[in-house]
Image (tube, rainbow, N blue to C red):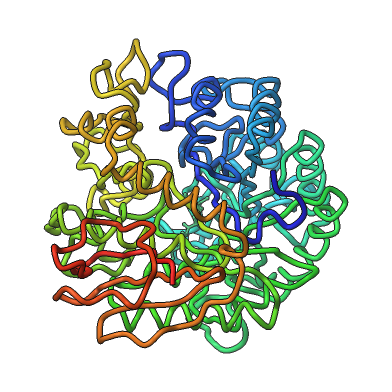
Length: 528
Ligand code: TEU
């Protein structure tokens, strides 16, 4: 087991507890299910697991609407079970990362219920952003901020005041200028660090701070009223002091297109790491990917933070579906169902992308089911629960297509997700063909590829954090050298190419052509 800066080159597996494994058979995944599948994660070889929120929640936004941070939602289990899970995982060499959602709470959180009851001008309301409306009778929202989901960002309460919510009305935004909000979150961090948690993922990390004047967005000029504000850095500096007491680490969900602004969060006294969404959204094109990799390494080197590499998560279209489309870039605006996807091509590319990603310096995130090569599922519209879909009146497909309960066993009911009740989201008819038990027995499966690649990465010293040197390669081909004579070659062109000089082929994402050439959309790991 690695100690110290384990997170600098870790492979971190994202568990969406609702859809991972159902221990009690009620159709919803839970902590008992995760505990039973810990050996699977150990065999996969991951260093840590990041759990999306498991706290008490009405689950309006899949748990990103937290009603109590110190309680595990009964749908998932108990606090005692979470503690057991953290300890059992650690026994297997797997660290735990929990998800903290500081921008907002659930409207069922005691603070918000108290604020509603206490009325205008009360200290309880000062913890949120309550304002009178505009217009002759206060019938218009206080400003023009657009929601991250469809609909406005303001909801009116019966006494006439409005409250701010960047996401759904069930997720009121906290007022981060209030000392009690800061104190509470530092206490929550301590609460989980005391329970053996090794890291925290910070949700919507660039959105917490608001311009106190809440000006219209269209007013323009000056800093953005709610994205990437300077006050955030002071907040994260005090969080870092708490984390340092426990040797714990942060990974920020910082969606910022500007590399220089992004890197400002990665300081020795702020966040250790942040998700690399530039990589996730990058199209499957050699020159674009190379520029992205170079740009990422260049922005991380001066701040001495490790890069992270992310291909998918619970918010975006699954990789094999995305890479099988004509436009392989991810864009929230163009993720619609119905855009045709060639899953054979998408799978080949996703396999090549997996080997490319796991060869890069820094830490790598794997979203549950990515290692099984799951495609985005087509879900009947009346079964979709994601508020992104529901609030759009059905025009936005939402994110449930990447959140379908995992197939564990091809021959069991509900693919072994859980026994009694059908899963909370329907599994597609071809789900058994992706089942983990079937793939574990197949040397050519996506699961076997991930296991082998992660094992090689773990057992080759310096592979995960040493230097990367580009090698000369034909157009459309990415070739780079890593420590200990490892070479990674990814062919994103349309024709087979010769492999660079090597003494051994360690792993390939697909079969080589008879003349030992690297086919299109294939990656190889070589020993120089
Ligand atoms: O996501 C934040 C979020 O919604 C961004 O991904 C946003 O869509 C992006 O800035 C687009 O411009 C997190 C969680 O990952 C997501 O599941 C939650 O729904 C959301 O926060 C609200 O907590």
